[in-house]
Image (cartoon, rainbow, N blue to C red):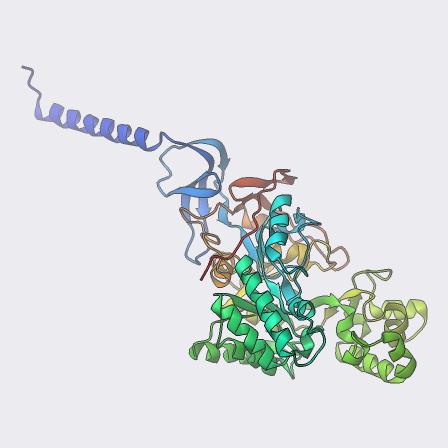
Length: 515
């Protein structure tokens, strides 16, 4: 029998332990994963500090997050993420577009958006069976995930209510049924656009009654409130908060038109704080630009828009219309502050068009454009006020954009948040900014297993260097894509690698689960 000295025994024990550990590691790592994001700085969407880990993906989900980066893993494809951050894919809470027409959503993918919310401002597909429309979207395989909302304006038109100020009981019942069916089909709630017709004609009793349907189905109301002007915005928010007695409510693209300064923003935010203290669930979204963008009809009086005959208005109320438009434009910072985004005058301000045509700007609006002849950008917001909204923990990020909209927010919003508000102005740490673009919207909308880098969650993820992010869109060239998001992963599929886009679109038509 061989005898070992105490020193030899210690060495023998040490090497035995090494063999055991190595054997355990070999067993642990026997699986081959589809994708490995190696040694990334993980910003997980919760707002917590970043940490370094290997992220292993199988199929469309995150299979493992390993903080011991000394362990080796086998994967079909590996991305070296050293010196890069990995975040959840961004969630855009307010988007306009038709996925059957533009399923690629490349401008959104380029700025890291992997999920969008459609059906905004009260307008959704005018179909009684939204489940059939959703199936059509699934069939075209959109590039991004899509969460759908039912539009109140559309419900009014489909129910026969249309432009009536008070729906008949029959039309009310039809609206409620259409809304309930849309929720059952998978919609996450209802949107309202009370600055647009026919939603403009709805009163609080109508909105509260529909809010009860949304609440019964476990949904959310997102609202472009009735009036965003400084003098009316608080009353408009109170109207929405009243609906919050029945379901969670959300302020779309929160702003105060003509409002100025941090103090004014805090007054508005305090209104929401008091509502939360009274048990109302209220959130908001925001885009980082001081110009809004919508149809030129926003400038015209209600009596010059549908259902009224515009040509008749020109004949009988021309002087009144001219005076209204002139005062409106002056109030909105003058003709230099209205930039036409579509139609023959695209890219020119109202002041430039007026000079070129040698006629007053109100005559340009009345005779050369009309209430439905263009969309435009309107420079009407105050930057310190808007930045105060941005910093609030209940305010998330949206574009209010679309694949075909001529405003830089459609291509630059999420890049600008990182480039300007995080890197340059240091308004918030990157971890909190990412939470506003991922975990917070997922929680607010009710998106299951999305919005976080977490084991078992869907593999919607971004890999990038924060200092490399660039917002390239301008008001003159609004559709230039953002850059710097090196890898964009949607449901486990690498959709974007550098400047290359995969033809294998992997977005899903998301559907809300039962309450």
